[in-house]
Amino acid sequence: MTPRDLLVAVLLTRLGGAFSLRTILLAGAGLVAAGSVVSACGHTFFALAVGQLPLWIGVALLVAGGIGAAGAWTAPDDRGRVAARALAGAPAAWVVGMPLIGVVADASWRLAFVAVPLPAALVTMALLAAARPAEQRRRSASLPALLRKHGAGSWVFGEFLVMSAWAGTLVFSGALFIQTYGTSPRVTGLALASVAVAYLGGNTLASRIRERCQLTRVLPRANVGAAVAIAATWIVTPNLFVTLALFASASLIVGARTPQGGAARTARLL
Image: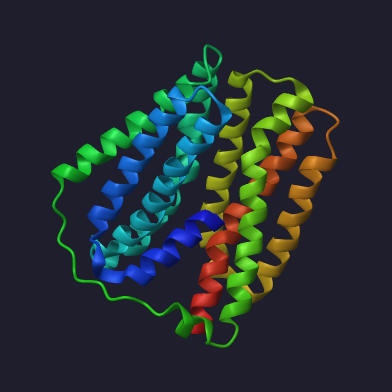
């Protein structure tokens, strides 16, 4: 979860039961659709920036609402499995979407917004409009009360720094391949998709780590390993394959440590 997703999740927590999860997801999909159209039609950098605002707010709503729906719309025995699939949705979207975006971007960068985000948003809205899941009324949570618990504030700050670093790496990762090695949009899309596959592998690895190791020992080591791998991705650039290997290694570690961070702190707070 990126800092953007975290901010939206905090706002949704404060709103509590004011909106149903279905309404939140519909709003997120609608904002993604609107932002995609505005971005594709923008003729200036300012117009493109304006279009990105609703698009990424919509993505954050879908991430936060989707994780919440995974718990609220499923039976207790299925919640862990469904939540894991929800968390894997973003990297899975990279695996499918990045190569497609790379292909259409060869013709026009505007098609990148029309080929993937817009159809995905419209399909999501159609599915949500047809679905009528039963929901229990949710209560507002108190973020200050959570932060007053021992160690919670430092954990939130640490996770914010970790995910800010990873989000920044993802934002500029395409430029790293294109400007350093002159890769085409198609090759860049395939490279980023392979990095997302490594992230999914890290998610799978995390479930085994929780069973076999102590999280308090594994998490600090994973954080250091991720920091070294991310730094090396930008510093050690002899050729495309080395950079891709380092980036995939960083993605694997981040994909493994992200569920660990939440699990370790949840175990301490509950």
